[in-house]
Length: 157
Image (cartoon, rainbow, N blue to C red):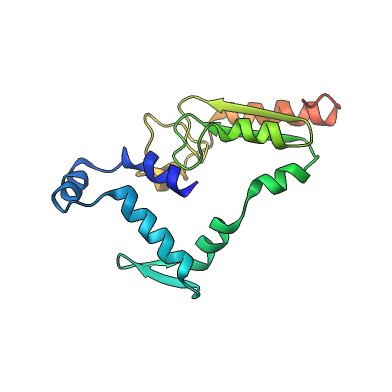
């Protein structure tokens, strides 16, 4: 997941930063892999990476967890929604969720929506803080309401 995110986020790096990285001959994907490996070797809860404090314990636990195991055991109805502008989870994960979930599962990919289910003009993390203050895309609300109604009526798929 973190490798996919590195590739997806590379397109969101500002042009000036991309230029500096080229001048410094820094491969962003290779650098983020190096940081991940460093986090895996730590034993402390917090580690400094590039001057920033990083929750190393969370990253180690995240990298060690395989959610497919949970999906294989899950039998309750599932509604999985992601956006076409999601830079944190690949859209193909919807197929994995549908294939592995043991209960009735509905997956939806919404165009023009980010990982936090807000409408966006383009795929970017730079507006997430402001986006988080806006309401979720109204299509999401409709999808959840219809899905929940189906679950309650025994029509979940």
